[in-house]
Amino acid sequence: MKRNSYWMIGAGAVAAALTGMTLPPLAAQDNGLPAREALDYLGRQFGDERVNWIVEMRGYDGVPEPEEWEIFVYDPDSRYLVREYWAGKGEATNEGAATDFFPDRSPFGYFRSADLKLGSKAAFTIAEGEARKARMGFDRLNYFLRCREFSREPIWTLELVDAGGNLVGKVYISGDNGDVLRTVWIYRGSRGRPDGGPLVLDSAAPQAGGGGSDGMRQQTTGSGPALRKFDPAGEPDPLSPPATGTGPGAPPMPALPPRPELEPEPAPTATGRPEVPKGTDTRIPPPPSAPGSDTRIPPPPLPPAP
Image 1 (cartoon, rainbow, N blue to C red):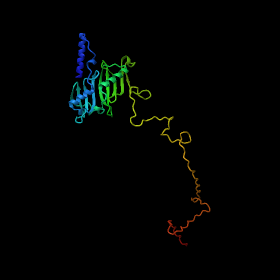
Image 2 (cartoon, one colour):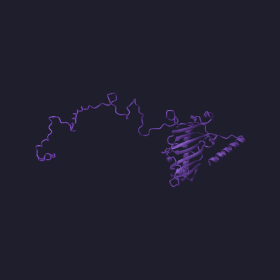
Image 3 (cartoon, rainbow, N blue to C red):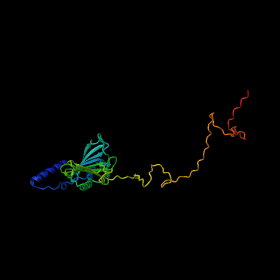
Image 4 (cartoon, one colour):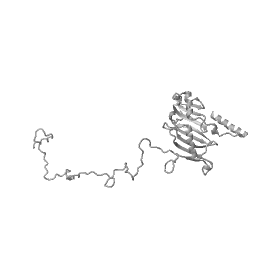
């Protein structure tokens, strides 16, 4: 196993110190097992359908890559939908139903092994370049391959560990296109805080002005139209009321016909009825000349005089 092999290397280093022998650098002795080869071992041993949907891969103490991988795959026949496998040099074993996720916590998601376009070796090269830019030294790496939450994109998380076993940084890399999504660096000692504590630099932390630092990938607008900030000098605000007047930018006003003036209503009299002007004919108009065409209701007959 990986941890036993490192114990043997450490014992060899002690023996070399006692006998005066020199031991080559650890990276020259052990290049590790690439993640893609580990998946190939698993597919040959148990069938390619077993590695169709990946939940998570873990590899520890990579110099630069781990010697073995813990592989968690989606298995609908398993008790909690996830099965664990182990893959080493040229072999793979079935570790049974996994309890690392359900029922207590849900995995980030599931991604197809075919969607992994960036292998562990390329992820190490990118992480090493980010460490050089940050002037951060490290001794070994821990690898975690998970799905980006609410998506199918595989994401590499590489933990950088120094010779003393201290975590000195994390690099998040897209397994689809190799973009560096986030970096976290932890400076200690003379490079730490003035009070003696560690100095943490997170590229995703809010910066002055509300944006992220240069280490965080800029978010794209996707396939839809981009949202543009309103510029009052460049265009009118679409939410403002329509402009009026004849100033610049105001729409032309349509020509409207003059509004007819209404005659004032007659003032009410003492009886409460409006006063009728003199000379106005208040009699009931005569019936129409054509018989049978009058649709009005005739008035009731007058009662005879007493």
